[in-house]
Image (cartoon, rainbow, N blue to C red; front, side):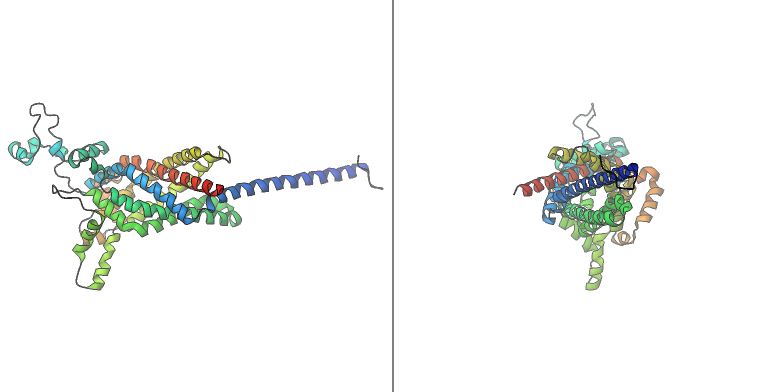
Length: 398
């Protein structure tokens, strides 16, 4: 029992001691919370911030290469469907298909001689020369162009994905960490919007830097080689084919004409910036909640699973929301008239698509786009984070 001071009632002395004990306990709780927060923050910084740009780029490049190879067939299907809706003709699709089920003439094919005998209308119905959907594209490309046709443009995809993702993901990490540290100290209410802003800025840098390769990839996937025995054009030949028609003897004019290599950049940014904003602002909360339930010592398998699931959901949602902008981008990139291509705008292209095909036209190719975007984002983000996890633990053991 604490003795009371002379002249003071005992209940006042007891109350003072109780208040002092309460304040001490409160200070201890604050110290524990501060220590826990500091530990969590230092853990995140050790696992993420301490990795250099080189390690991040290495992780991102591996993720991009893996994703580009796996989802390329769906990318081909999406591009073919969107190009067909824009008026690109795919002649000869019926040569290998329209008589496959003919029981009377099982060996007959729609070759030129056959069509001359039977007539183009009776031998090959109009719908036979059109792609009807994702699986129809995959089937007809395989039958007519071979299995390798499904990976047409893969070299461009790899040439594009490695530098693009190598810029995109590391820059996103760096921007997010800097912005989160700043907003946490100065404007905590803005912290939830950091992934949206960081993703948009990082995607803009990556897109502008590597856009000509993106343009070449789209055109390689959209246009098939019509001459038999001729090797399909690669990235360099495709880009040279764009520049040559607008060349002149004036050097200044030639330099101006090189901007055709950035045809459709506005449409690309109009698609990619909202895509990144939606994707990262959806992915980060899902990922952090899933990893939060696993505790501080998350394994490589849990990092892989949490990031793939979050990336799959976020990529699918973002792909659905931005599909009309993707259709407009494809239409601008496959325009063969250089003069018209330089005059096209995203707004005019969207209005033209709406006038020609309505809502269905704006969402042309949504199935392969969804089938590609969800797994692609999931693969890229999960592989990237797992490689970062492995590099961090390797550096930690040295």
